[in-house]
Length: 471
Image 1 (cartoon, rainbow, N blue to C red):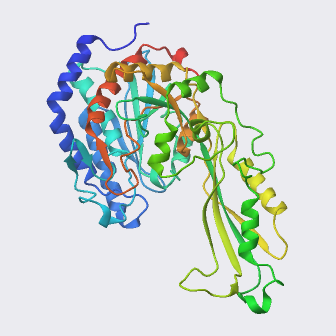
Image 2 (cartoon, rainbow, N blue to C red):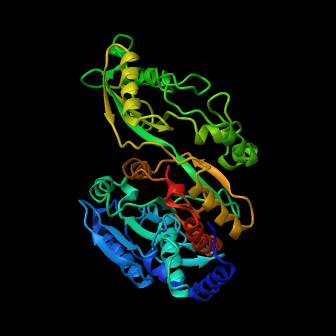
């Protein structure tokens, strides 16, 4: 099959994006002015405004069946265009909700008053994920305005709860399988490998977390009267925490590594070819040595190996001076990043067994589970992944890196599991863009180039058959 966009069509798209650039940026600024913070109840109306603004933008772009669909929480926005007979159908996922802006005093400009400085667009949501969602809307609009049609069928599902863990989206997907049926899922909510270095992310780690609460005596005790004769909750907690890993970072929970999928030789070679500079990383994060599981490179440790990390410890007295007590209570929060084919529920069960086995005498221990998300992977040689790589290379004029992400987007695994489709993580952000932090911004050279990459990718997908895209 013929693949890729025609030179004349690509040139027409280029002209359209160049001509409309300032108008598009003004539209994006309107979107960014809506403080659609999903985690704060006082912004419930803003969430509705954000969803409606997006729906209006999709209708204006030429998409059909646009609907703001209710869930038990914030609404999702759906739209489609299904006139490319015999061609693949792409489901585009993103989110219009954003993180809170605290601490406000660290922002150089107001978080919901977008400003362009040094060819960067500053505002909450500019990179994560309003800016990247908006690029797909404008790529579709450009094709419908210039070519008059789309080379593939498209469906868009844009939610308003990603930043709070997508609590209602999995149920929505289950209830709307037919409406969401597609051949490939495309998500632009990740990043490039670096400035001018495109990357397709083909896998993410999963996640599970627990809180460990240790209870000793019924109240704090005087350390002079009871010290040495009654268990200290903090000492008991430290003993449990120390049992999780050895001195070299290997996790000692029984069965923790049982289902870890081995790294393919081709993947290992691809990671080496990236030329990752571990010395530069040390400078960036301010450490004199990197640390991790023995026998693996830094990229392998953060992309393809599971972890167990202590995220917080609490208990006892931490005020000024000293208070001579045996604390009655202590606690810690831990999270595990998981890799294919680890199951979050199985790992939590193993954590519980390990904690019980290593619990010191004289205390009771309670384990509370937190959110879980399964790991996800689409083989990096999958045709949809490789097609994305070709589109990046056409616009950026450098080879595309094929990477995995160390983080977790739990709903990605749900898409993979419920709909059974290949997932292409095709992002345009940079790790330095302060998403989730003050002064979030989006480099506009990647906004400009990303529009062209997306437009080309639709044509690359059109050159693949539905059979090509089956996992």
